[in-house]
Image 1: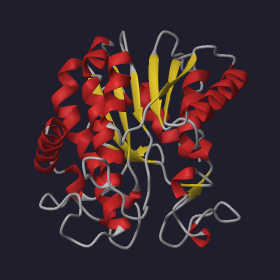
Image 2: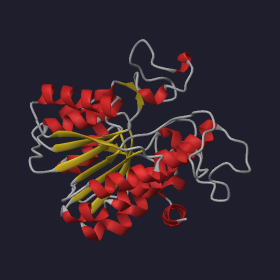
Image 3: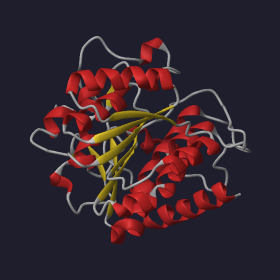
Length: 302
């Protein structure tokens, strides 16, 4: 399997500006490192500033790129997202919506929104739409939405997105939020392609030892060896997990391609029920994508 650095070998991103959310751990670190290694100016958008500063220093040391910055961003806090957007000036060439949470106990934001949907989708939706003008000013920007094979667990329940009436299931909620990440790419690309902005989504694969798994039992975490099991789900290193993210963020191979879902550095095949790979048809449904965009806009405006 390719690593992020291998995907960007020979690519020069000098003069390009990038933001990576959740860049203080896991595949976010390796995504940011690969972009910095290709000479991009990279902003690590993180909740924990101390962890972000430590990561930035390590990336600078490993790449020699001094243009690595840190900025505070809590995707579940509307004021934090608004402050980040207000503080950004100039064009933005690459936005990697990487941060996320997976399968926690039921938690809600101050607004009462279910935390996985609020963080994984609504926070990134507010960030991307808030930065639209900066992306448009880049004349060829890319937005990358990090989803998951978990999206095959279900689509969007538009009648009860925030589990106000149905019983809360952490995996159903996670799947819904990851489907939303793909639908965002579908509708975002439709709306923004004319502005020169490409939007794609991806499944990074199962990742070894990242904070995303902090709510899981130990038995469900990293195996002792890298392997692909009988259901086709593969374990990867963070460096391998970031490969598809940087492909969509910066590789010339993706020029002109948008509104799609990738895994293992290729466009995904349709999902088959017996294999946890591929993309579910409902996640690419343009009507659902348009509806989610409107619902998200209305939610944030409320």
